[in-house]
Length: 120
Image (cartoon, rainbow, N blue to C red; front, side, top):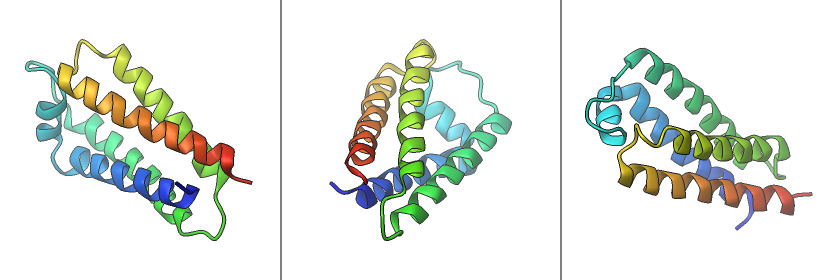
């Protein structure tokens, strides 16, 4: 898979996640976290905004004529850090969400890492 396709996939995935946190924070809290986990619309909206910014950068960079190593590198770092944070907060996540999202985010990070290394 080429770098531009990788960035498109990561951008769309982050866009969907951002939309959940911005548009339906209570639903997102109930979907990802165990019962009793306190929802906080404020932090979830700020988180959604940050992820939306990254998604925008990824999608815009995916339309450039050559791979954007800076955006690819940031994508790698974000996905590795997100996976580690999920593991650190494993007691808060529903087990199935931790497994599915952890694997998905780590997979996106691996794709971005490969694209970063393959880019000139």
